Amino acid sequence: MAAPPSGLKRPWLPRAFQALVLLLVGGFLAQTLWNHWKQLAPHAWKAQPGWLIAAGGIYALGLLPCAWFWRRVLQQWGYRVPWTGVLGAYYWGHLGKYVPGKALVVVLRTAALRAYRVPVAVGVLSVFYETLTMMAVGAAVAVLGLAVAGEAQLWLVALALGCALVALLPTWPPVFLPLARWAGKLSTGEEQTLQNHFGWPLLLQGWAAMFLCWVALGASLAGVLWALGTPWPADSLTAWARVIAASALAVVAGFLSLLPGGIAVRETVLVATLGPMLSPPQALVAAVWLRLLWLVSELGATIMLYVAPRWLSPGENDHAHHAT
Image (cartoon, rainbow, N blue to C red):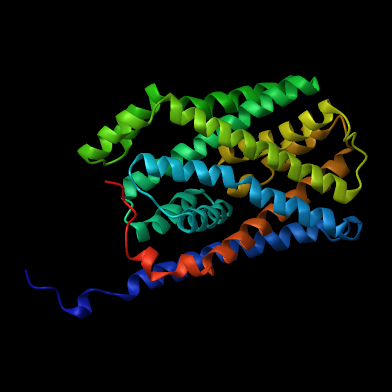
């Protein structure tokens, strides 16, 4: 069959779409950064830069176990995407959560995988599987942390238990496998791979990786508290349990709210959970600083990975790393 005339190929469409996405994400990021900075302006001078930088770095590194598990999920389907590709797509996708609806997270990460010839259905299902596993573990960590801390507010415990149930159920193999077959347009080989490799062993690997992630995110919140000089008992196990539970439950509740970046929900939950240790104004300032630091860390990691030589290497983008 003859190729269509070059004028009908519209080679500018992919670049136009990429430019539109960048403008969309950039606009919402700029608005989020500006709104949060206005909230912090009266308190900015009180923060210690060293601890803020440490908290942001801990967060960025704390997401690595999640990226590892996502790469592991792709490997189970037979797609050996290099680390630079996985990390670039993963951190880039995080920026999409600040756009209303959060669907852009899936779009960004799946589109980035197309450079490695990962089918759209596989990419979408892998993103959902990794994300829901992360949220399920986060909710479970929150339940455990609140129990250790002796949380007296029953609504927080109920919220954590509800979030755990909502996020955990879709990842259980007896539930995930039929859901994946129903939702994804998979080939016969992909369905067979799904049946053979997406069982309890893979899910347990995800739980171990995500547990490390949530501990790191709790440590990032602790860094913010130190940066602000807030009087929290850092030598107490129950205090650490509360800090880790607070960061986990705030993120999971914000995710399930479907609001851009979990705006307002994350701050409300964080302030309530930290209530026994901090005054509401102290907790709120910490919550806003935490959001701002995490956003800047995601943006910085994305920029670094997109200018990395390996990410731009034609050798990686022109050939799929597909296991046979």
